[in-house]
Image 1 (spheres, rainbow, N blue to C red):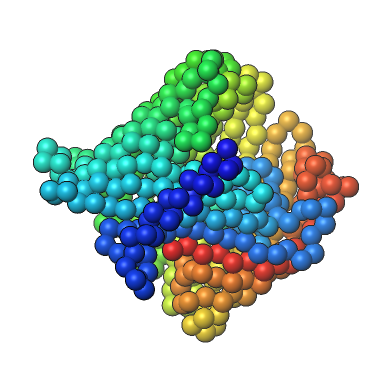
Image 2 (tube, rainbow, N blue to C red; image 1 turned 120 degrees about the horizontal axis):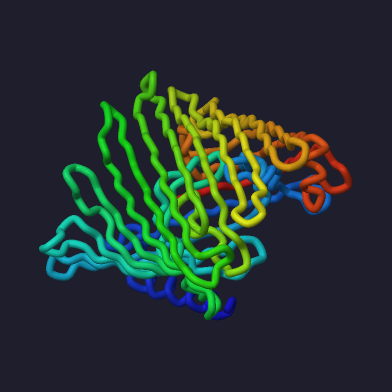
Length: 398
């Protein structure tokens, strides 16, 4: 599988680049898209092989600055063609993370410009439909796609836009076992104007299947509200209220469809703010999430509070600071973990979102005995209740 994926990635990249004129960059060719994401770098003082990943396990509990310790790259190639006013695009994204195989993250074809629905975009294959993330915890809270499927986006409905997708449990690189099936439908309604500068978005999820633990059904609903110039100019706010059950995941994807694991019931409320005021930018998050397993009834309650600030001392040098505290409540004693990271970063501009960044960081994390015991196989090994990480990391998207 790895050899096939490598050959596929190389062949497609070569095919895309073959169309470039002499001396031209990929992004200068009409209809050609070349974008991606990558991060990596050395951690100098790690112990027990722990280079990052200091988290209690909640989906919004890994505050990432100076806490990733991994290496990876995702590269997206796309080419758009226009035939008689109908546009069609072929898209392929290979990815390589750590020592894992090269995987196919996206491989789909999209068509638009039909006379009966000029704004709608029809697609089939495997594609990401990532709606909105909170960057400092590296999580897309609303995110459907990522499996083999088909659908349509950007259907205009009275000033709003509707997207609909149907999916199987298969991936481009792998299929579900013959006796295990999963199907999912998502409906995404966006551009719902609520107030000046404010917009609502609703994502619905319904799952069915067979050969799954405790039945194959599931459902979910996510509602987000985004507000520009929240309280003061330059500050934006994103509020999320979400719930899911069974084999539907809280973000809109599948939950545990391997035929060996049960689903769960999840509730989440999260609020994120973003700001850029002159040289000072940043993002902060407060979140609460409950998870209750369908079969065992085991329940966890996760709380997260943290933020990252960025101050540009010059156009190309920023100081970064990230502070967070997280709690996990469950059957045993409460687990707690706190982290502080300080970093200096070389960047292209003063903006918080400017990339690439080259960062020299120092991270100090502390946790209680309950967290050490629950994570004895990783950062809590040998009863450790604190760690310090020093490293250099690059992060880039283009």
